[in-house]
Amino acid sequence: MPVPDPFREGMARGWKTRDGSQLDSDLTLEADVVIVGSGAGGGTTAEILSAAGYRVLLIEEGPLRTSSDFRLLEDEAYSSLYQEGVGRMSKDGAISILQGRAVGGTTLVNWTSSFRTPAPTLEHWAREHAVAGHSEAQMAPWFEQMEQRLGVAPWLIPPNANNEVIRTGCEKLGYSWHVIPRNVRGCWNLGYCGMGCPTNAKQSMLVTTIPATLEQGGELLYLTRARRLLISGDQVTGLECQAMDSRCVAPTGRTIMVKARHYVLSGGGINTPGLLLRSEAPDPHGRLGKRTFLHLVNFSAAQFPAAINPFYGAPQSIYSDHFQWKDGTGGPMGYKLEVPPLHPALAATIFASFGQTSAGHMAQLPNTHMMLALMRDGFHPDSPGGSVELRADGSPVLDYNLTPYVWDGLKRALHSMAEIQFAAGASAVMPLHSDAQYMTSLGQTRDRIDSLSLELYRTRLASAHVMGGCAMGENPQLAVTDSLGRHHQLGNVSVHDGSLFPTSIGANPQLSVYGLTAKLATELAARLKNP
Image 1 (cartoon, rainbow, N blue to C red):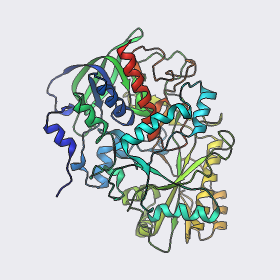
Image 2: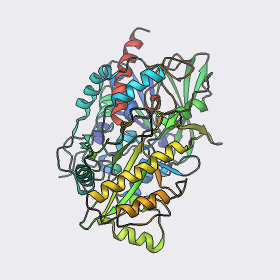
Image 3: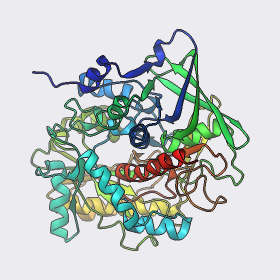
Image 4: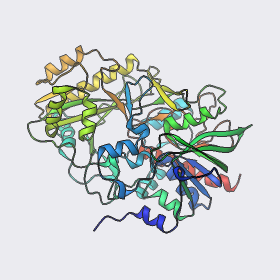
C-alpha cells in the first residue's frame, strides 16, 4: 500500500494554495500577516499566528513538492528543491552553499540534526552583542516546545558505519562524542534525507506547521518571489512579488501585490537581507547584510577495509564537540565534527576529480568514509564573516572572505579528522584538497596537511548553514533588529529566521531557528492584539 500523502489530501479538502506559475493575470491579496519564506522560521511563525486567529499568507519562492514527488533521485531533488538548482555559491565561486528552496524550505532537505543553541553562544550574544531575553534558561521552554512539536529526540538506532567511525575513533583517542537528536517520527532509516522524505517521517514544515496553518484557514502562495517591500516612512505599505515559472528559473511577467498589517521576513541568511537591500530599507548604520556566517565546512575522506556504504542509514547520528569549546568563545577557531552522507552525485562533487582518478574514487565509494568539520565563525575579531550584496539583476550573493584565523581552524580540523579516521581503522586518509591524495599513515598524512597550500579553489569548502546578516540586538548601531526580531527602523516588519544570529551557532542551526522563532512569533501574536 502506498504511503499516504497528507498534503495532497489536504489540498483535495480545500486548503487555500496558489501556484504562481499558473496565474493568467496580476493579483492583489490581503492578509493580517504575510510571511516571506516557508522554512523553519516562516513555518513556525505561520502556525503560531494562524492559531492565534490571524489571517496568514505564506509566500514561498520555490515549488510545492510533497511525499508523492520524492523519488530519492539526486538529479531530480537537487535541481528542484535547492536554491539555484544546488548551484548557489559564494561570490567568488569558492564555497558551495546548500539551501532549500521549496515549500518547507531547508527543513525539507536537511539531514535532521537538531541541537539547542549552545549556552556559550547565548552568553556571548548577551555579553558582546546586546541581545536580551535569550539566556539558556529563558530559551529552554521554547526549545522544549518545539522538540515536542517536531519529535526531536536522540537517535535510538545504532549508527550506520559512516557515523560509527566518529564514535570508534573518538573512543580510542579519549575524545568526547554524543548521539545526535533528530526531528523524525517513524523514520525508515533510508539515508536519503537530503532529497525529501517519501515517508513523511521527517518532521519538516511540509508535514507539520504548514498543514496546521492551512487547516486554520491560512493561505500558501508558492512559485512566487518576493521582489521588494514598498516603504513609506517607518512603515511598509505593501509587498511586490513576481510569479515564477514552473522551474522557478524566470519570472512569468505576472505581478502579485500583497497588503498586510505586518510583514515577517523568513527567507534565511542570504534571501532576507537581499529582500531588504532590494527594497532600499533604511540602514543608517550600515549593518544590513553584514556579519553573515556559514559554519564553513571542510572534508577528510578515508578508505576502510570493510564496506562503509555511506549512502545508507540515518545521515547523521554521531557527532563530536571535543574541539568546539576548548578555549570558550575566544582563542583559536573551534569546530564540530560530523559526517555527510555520500550519495554518488554528492560524492563526485565533493571529490571534484577527473578522469581515471574520479573513476577510482567512485569505484571505491562503498568503502569510503567522509568526515566534515563545521567551523564556528563569528566569535573572534579575526572572524568577521561575509556580507550579502546584490548582483546586477537584484539577486543576492554572499561575499565571504577567509582570514588567516579561519585557515588555521581549517588546518587543525584536517588534522583532527585524519587522527580520528586512522584511530577507527582507516587504511588510508585524504584531506579534500586538489593537491592531496590517499596516504596510509597518520604521520604521512600530518606532514602532507602541513605542506598543503590552503587557499580558495584548491581546498574543498562548502556550507549548509547560513546565519546572520540581519543581526538582532538592542543597540541599533550594531543590529538590524531588536532582540524580538523587530526591525529597528520599520515598525511593521519583523525578521524570523537564522539571519537574526549575531554569530554562527556552533551547532546545526535548525532547532535554534525553531526555538527562537517560536518565542518571537508568540510575542508578535500578543503585540498584534494590543498594538
